[in-house]
Image (cartoon, rainbow, N blue to C red; front, side, top):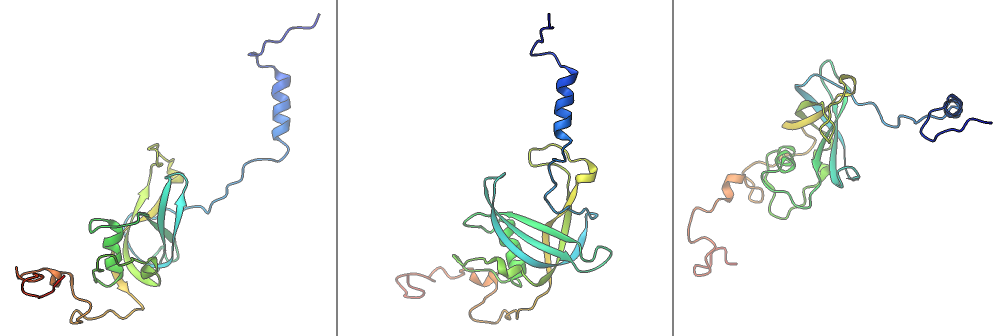
Length: 193
């Protein structure tokens, strides 16, 4: 009489069959460009590409700026800077602050579109940081940690003319302050709405 097999028991012949099936050459393939790790610090880097895309994991639009280090020991290393891709940005957002840096210190007017192209082909001082945790908080092994641009600190070189602060159309941020209580008043007709 043949032995009865329980469903929960592990049988060597069943294991051998599964092993043979997996040895047919199939295996998942690593489908990403390996990310690099540089020491945290400040580097000169040129933004050579900018894009936005829908991130399936975060379930939101993400803005990505791609930089290439242009000085020192890590010359040519590529790093990325990420922002949340929201429809409207405020003065406190990292994207707004860094856009103003990329635009030579000029503050955009309300409802201006803050184009990603403003960053391209410019050299900045950038600060890097090491990504040590996944988005759900678990820790990466040290061999999988990588670097990203944490902040754009300063515009070093641009291929655009930066208007002087004396321009009547592009005033520095502090000139937008209203100092006269009658300015914009309907009664005086100055700056009438």
